[in-house]
Structures are given as C-alpha cells and as structure tokens.
Length: 629
Ligand SMILES: O=C(O)c1ccc(O)c(O)c1
Ligand SMILES: [Mg+2]
Image (cartoon, rainbow, N blue to C red; front, side, top):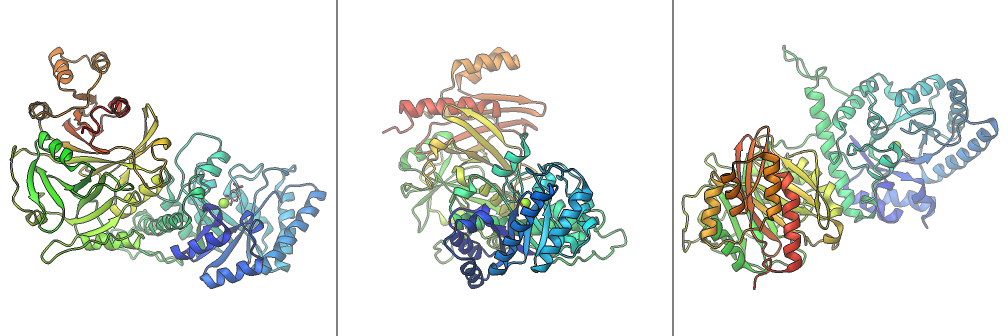
C-alpha cells in the first residue's frame, strides 16, 4: 500500500512538514495549496526537497468551486485552472484534486456539470495533468461519491477520475459497498480520515474534528476493503483536519499518522479475510488476491492481565505507608535496582525509590501479560513505538519495553497460567507480611493524558496492545469536564482508563499534574476497608450529601447505607450487578482505589466519579492531607 499524508495535517512550515513526513516513513504527500502559497520555497525548491527526501508529490489540492457555474465564471475558472496546471509542471506533480462546488454553483444540471468538467479534463490533458474530482459532504449540488463518479463516467475522459475521501462518505452514512463497482482506473486518489461520531454540521465536523484512523469511530477497514476490492492501487493518503494536530509537535504527529496507516493496512487485510465474499468457504477456497498489496503485522492476542504496576512519588515513605495500610505485603528490595516490591495476592506494585522527576508520570510503568513478549514487542516496534532502554544484570528477566505516548513505560511480560510472575525472585526478603494471603488483582489503571496526545494514546493502545476503545464519557469536575476513555480487553482482564485532564491542569506539555491511580479488586470490600481503617488508612472523605442521594436513587437497606457512609465507600448498581469502591488519599500525584465487583458489573462507578473529583479538588486546594509532611 502506498502511504501518503496531506500537509494540512501537520504544524510548521512546508519544509518542516516534508522532513517530518520523510522521517516517519511516508511514501508521498499531498501539498495543500496554503502551504505552498505561504512558503518561501520556490516550486522548484519544493520539487528538489521532495526528491532529496525521497518523498513523492502525489496530489496538489484543493482546487475549489469549478463546476455548475455560469459561462463567465467558467471562463475564469479555466484560466485559474491553467495557472495551477503550469505550477504543477514546475513542481513535477501530475494529479490535482478538484472538490465539488460549495459556493459559486448556480446550475444544478448534470449535463452542464459534465460538459464543464469535460472542458477541464481536456485542458488538463494538454498539460499532462489528471483531475481527481471529489464530492465534499457539503457540496452545493454534488455531495455524494456516487454522484461524483456518475459525472466522471459521463465525461469519460482519461484525464478525469474521482477522489474518494472516507470522511465525506462516512460522515454522510453513504453505503460504501458500491465503491466496488467503480472502475479502478477512474479512482485517481483515496484519502482516509477517521472521526468521532458527533452530531453537528458536517463542515465544522470535517474541518476541526477529523482524526487519524483508529482514533475515531468510522468503519475504515471496511471502507478500505471495498477500495481494495475495486482494484485500486494508488496512494492511501491521510487528510486529517484537526485543531490539535496542527499545533502539536510535527515529527511526533507524523509518526502517530504513520502508525494509523500501518494499523489500517493490517485491519483492512483482516476485514477482507473475514468478510463474506473473501473468507475461505467450506471447501477452503483460496483467498482472492487484489492488485493492492496489504502488509500485515506480527499478530498478538489481547493481553491476559496486568503483570505489575510501578509508581513513583517524591515521598516514597508515604507510598509504603498507604500500601501497607491497604493490606499489601512488602516483599523486599530488588537486588540491583532502587525499587521495592509490594504484593497483595496477584496484585504486584513496584515502588520506584527514585524521586519523581518534574516531567514524569506518577504511574511510571505497567506490565502486561502477553502470549509472547517478543512477538508483541515486534508488533509494537513495527507500529513505531519507541523502545525503552533498560539495564539488565545477568539472570534477571529481560523485559520487552516500549514507551506509551504519555511516557508511561509499557512492559510486555510472559504471562503464567497461575498468574504468578517469575521475576519476583529478583527481590530480597521482605521485612513484614502483615496480611499474607489476602487476595487481590489489579482491576484497572487510570492514566492522565496530556490533552495534545489523547487521540494518539487511543490509537497506541488499540494498535500495539490490542485493547478495544469503549465509547467515551465526560465527567464533570470542579476544574472542568474530564473526558474518560476506557480501553479494555473483551474479558475485562485488562482495563485502562485514559483521562483527558482539563487544560489548566495539563498545561505543561510533558508533566502530568493530574492525578493517576491504580484500582485493586478484592472479594470483600467492606472487610478490606475495615482492616485498612484499623491500620490507620486515610480514606477519601465522601460528603454526607452523596449518601442521601444514594439512598434516594437505590432505596438501600439502612444498615448497608450506614456501613457505606461509615467507611467512606461508594456504591453503584446497574442491570448487571453492583459495585463498591473506596479511594485513598493522594501521594504526590498517585492514589489507590479498592473495588469489589458483584455479579457481572462491568463499569467503573461512573456516577461516583464527579464526587471523587470534587473531593480531591477540595483537598488539593485545602492542601490538608494530599502532601502530609
Ligand atoms: O474542507 C475542505 O474544504 C476540503 C478541501 C479538500 C478536501 O479534500 C477535503 O476533503 C475538504
Ligand atoms: Mg478530501
């Protein structure tokens, strides 16, 4: 698959964009006209820069408001087009995108449009240019890809074809199956963009909220599957108008973009192999082959569970105290590293004794149990995940580590059938075992995401770790709405919650000032809470109003309600079951949660999240127990 990206996706100057695209590994780019018009580079310089970088100049775009106009306007439009064709010759480019008229069309007649497009195609032919006609979702008369293709067929000129843009097609819910009926020779270009499903006018949606494939909710593998089946072999190019990407670090965004295409390529091949028309039939029919070659990736299953979580704080002693009060056992220090191991059943927490640096996340690392760490690491690396360099001594377990977009280190660990971890023998004798035998597992981990990397994180965990994004929620907090995105395995054994902190709290690019936490699941939360209270644990103090509201909503047994209130427990119930949980005070920017899932409850106590945020906000502002001396 030939990969491409439009310069409009990125920040910086044209030269910076081109360099970033080459570093990220794109085959070619679309030059967005604005980027050229505002550039100090001459067209010849651009051509040379691209050649030096090994980048193809695959599409010049956009050319607007050509068709369905009065004769006077047509004349002016043809003159304007010819100037661009001459410019393209200097750039060494041969394909231009012409989008359907949104502003100046006054004649709604296919015969007129076709006749005008025929004149354009003929002029383009004189200049050796191919015109890719694209239906914009908000085109005045032409806003449907099948309509655009009908016009291309009517004109029937070798220099006129169509451009398929997934956004314009999927935002309007057009059926994508008829793409297969398009003559592949007439598909001059394919643009891909994903987007969250939003209910707003389609132009604003398109201009501000497009995201890279895998970061939104469109069925892009299916779209691509139809394109491949049509027989298309040209560039598959990202055209993503996004307010955040165009102000983010250009090289980083280009890598995120490349990752999305590598992933889409794999997903498209997967869609083709499983969709009815291609799946090997009962007789094991050979899979059909298509002109476009789709690369695949090392295959991984979903992770089987969390192997460990590693936390950092300025004040290690406070973390030790909290874990001990929760019922964790201290298992000792590592032979060669400044880290401690604390366990409660199969929940393993590493305390990193190095003080958290200014820019470091509180949850420094997460280990995941996978079938094959090497295969999982190969996959992540092919998806351009940065590798974590880690010193290992003789006979220490070698972890495969990659760095997540929020700089949390992700370790791919060999899972074991009984949930134990072989590396724990690298830790010395612990000093005390206050509650040896208590059972717990890591239920979920909540990671704060810097606002400009949120979409990137969703794609990263989807593509590299095979976690499935769930529909996101918005949780009100005193400092703003917190966007909360659950990424999980189908069995719920691994649950990550990505929280997009309100901007004022995540202002600093790298620093995650927003709190993160690890939740542990136990069998009997009330007993766990009582034991923790007896060991002196400071609970997050839940306001009395909450319990009144709880009673109104659920009509709870008075005794049960009193127990919840006495222990600062939170409660939720849905059709599947019940959920009990409590939170600890915060140390540095990390805190812990204990949960009990009853029945098949699968959520996170979402109705309680605003209460937690409000109490934490209050505590932070009063600065009472969040940083106990
Ligand atoms: O928003 C636009 O104007 C615009 C321009 C060119 C495109 O290819 C497109 O998809 C949208
Ligand atoms: Mg487009």
